[in-house]
Length: 410
Image 1 (tube, rainbow, N blue to C red):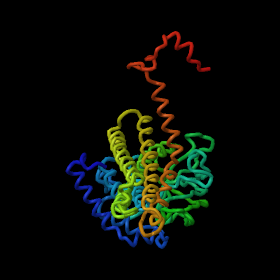
Image 2: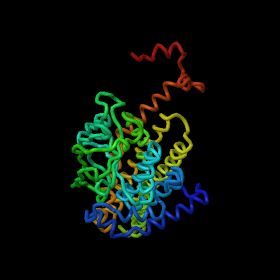
Image 3: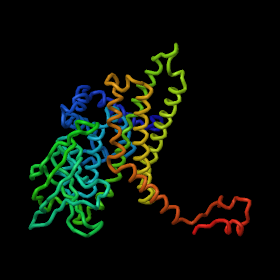
Image 4: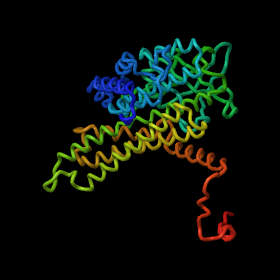
């Protein structure tokens, strides 16, 4: 986020975030990447002690009642630690958002309050082995027996699953009901959830990404989040904070590594920054970073102030998710290219960043899905409004009759 736009209070928040990022143990990052640590519990606990988790949650539940503009300030700093820790940090915010918006008072006291304090951890169980983007194709089921739901099925790629005390689980409660087929349940790990480690991830290690299995798990009816068969409402609500987490923004730190290297590294008798092949890459990267920051600020304000229609906000959020994650991947690759062969080694953290940032274009809805949403909402806006402005299509040398004759659509 651009510091020039920050208020005095936001600059204090920035300093808090910077102090937290400085605190993060170097060995924690290395051990996570080497998969010696399966879940960074101490990191979450420390963030909770500093009251940096779930910043948008109400104060009575441990949050600070802040906005996305403020949360982006913190995410921008935490992103410097790499994708794994930024993802784990951001997930607390999005799950707390669902609990706050749809939870009962009892659920908020039992789950939301300790979650924001970093005393417990939660995972969102959405993706299944048969697919992630096809949300309504879920096969996990929950049928009612007395005062319990009997849950069967499995979920995959649950970030933080190995460290989770409870899960938000989407399950079919009304087969064949289309958008009214799913419900959301708060499922505690101790209710009988089987948690298995997901091996072989390309990057983003140490987040406790898991496969979870439900075999006749009994979930009390009071653990239904929101209304029965209305899980789609929670899902669509969650897609805003979930895709906003895509603004992790560790790119600036990577680019600065490459820029400093280019200033020191010499070839053909001069610093390689003097060669356009290097300097132009740096120019393109910093332009993308500033563009992402600018879009992030606009989208945060749009969501915070509820500007426009729900469809307009959905489009803007998808644009940010797509553009930010694509840019971060491109910048990580350009940074490695500037460093050359040494960038492909562990001498610099760039090779780790390349492995990690690839995930962002897949996680929380692939960028292909974001493109689908963007064009869909754009067409809805375009084709539903009456043009009350200059018709530039008419600024041609042909008469309207001649133009009509030439413009053949079918």
